Length: 302
Length: 259
Image 1 (spheres, each protein chain N blue to C red):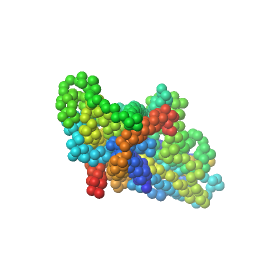
Image 2: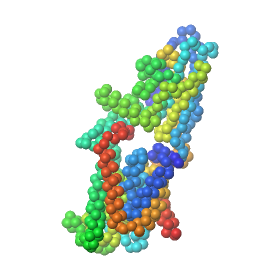
Image 3: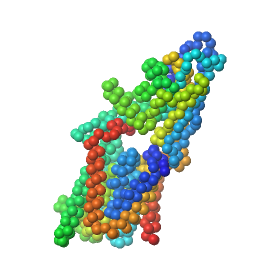
């Protein structure tokens, strides 16, 4: 079933896009991630212009994170103070990202920048996740208790001036740390169309040392607001949000997410994390290969 | 400006046309038409085929002894582009060089009854911009002729594979020496705007007559509404997109929870 995308200016097979959204949604429901890091590259592989792919993927992440965020709010799993600081940073970041985006487009380096960022981020995060999941699995197989990590924040964070109390996170740290984290993730959301959960969650645990019971909820809460802001910024600067594309993706992903969430309950979390790490590393590898081999199109028109 | 440029081939045609020595009525005329004056891009648009057809009117309705040939050209809106070229830099492929072209057509299709190089010499082909290699794209900023040629070849290759440039030396069918027809495929990703369908009557290396018709290609209905909203009302468009995704996300989870 062919459908014309009015902003991307090309016609796509609607079924393929819905299924793509469904697949990403399934994974995101299963692993509790937004899935933007899969949507953008997959859309680019399909032939959607990178700018439209990133902008529309951000819109889709909003829809994918709303139900999760609400559930966590009801359960009390959101540190609103921390979330607020992160969102403030995220808004700043998305504006900075918009400027960076325009600059990169003018230089003609936006595609390369997107690819390199993906390779670096997904490669690092995937590698870390794989190592952690592997260590836990090995310990379990050997019949040992999982090695406990001491919860504490990074010394760099401790050195920042000005301290606030974040009760729900159980922290007494400078708000500058989450603010900077928010800015970085906001920039990435703008450039890559990712919610940034896959950076936010590890950063919250390992850099800030937040209590794990509020990590996922707070991350989802910030993703919800920052992707909303990103959609707005994209709509007003690049004009690259394709509402038809976003709707198709959402149609697939919101249903896929529910199925995935159900499926996840029947699988061991360590295996889930291992699988997610493998997927993340695969995407990174695919992107890296794309950088090094001769691309099918040497010439591009702007 | 654009109008003036569009007129150029016409002026050229007037200059090149054999000055009617015998009488004014001795030149053949073309009566062209197209299958649709307006192509509307809507939700299921996957491209279309445009039929260019018409009649050749010879004075006194006498067919000449020589077989005349027909060339049809469908040309899209012309505009400035930046063409970038990827090169291998430190192992990875990045956009390393670029040129600006001031008058690059977003679509160009040419069909003829015989290969162009058998019909006219290079000079004539260049004057009338017949053939993909004869498009004048007005590069700005100076660069070597060799570089320029490389970029133009790259662009032609890219657009040809996207279906935006099309060349078919057997597209025109002439029946009884007076009626001609040609099908030109218009792909889904064509730029919107005013297109010009030109017909050339060529015999013995000379262009005897030129005629043209305008064709509008535009988005219509919902697609037009969305594209315009995205372009002109970014804020409202963004709000709508956000509201849509919130609504879809929320209603899906509510739906599944109830079960």
